[in-house]
View (cartoon, one colour):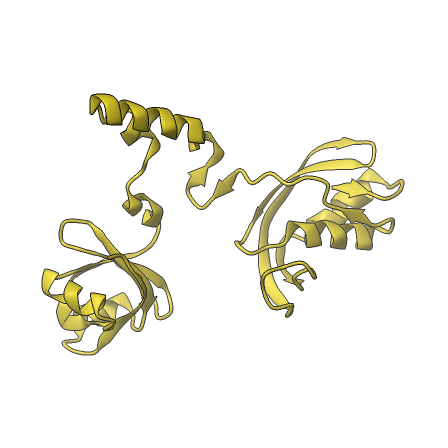
Length: 211
């Protein structure tokens, strides 16, 4: 973040601390979503370095937070104004920068697999799709229910063979086969307790099915 004028460092720290928690944001003019007021949560803001009018911060925030707007708002409250000069995303969910690979790594691993049929390197750079839903509550379904999902049906209770706990209505859930293969994702229409105790009813509304 670059501040547009001189400022007091302690005042800046106090102002930044007030932005931790739920904040209101309106997406900027150049954005892909509707410019309506919405709430996003800032979990933590750590000032790593202050060099003149430049402030290096590490921010842990909810998905969909506009950091450019956050910098603008901090500068507005501070007084001189501010803008985001550079942004680096270091983590998304359980995907971290340390575990990332370059496209050159992927290309080299593919070439080795293509020419020598050795899977060792390509398995290091290509993760199974199930890794993406590592932290998403899971519901295991019968093979007989998979075909119905492929044809656009919602998941009914008779098609379920296993449910992880603490699923609430509206939660995103992952649908897996009995072999642990990702079939799709959707939103729970009932709690995990109801899925286990009830004999009938729709349990999940799918939003994406992998074919």
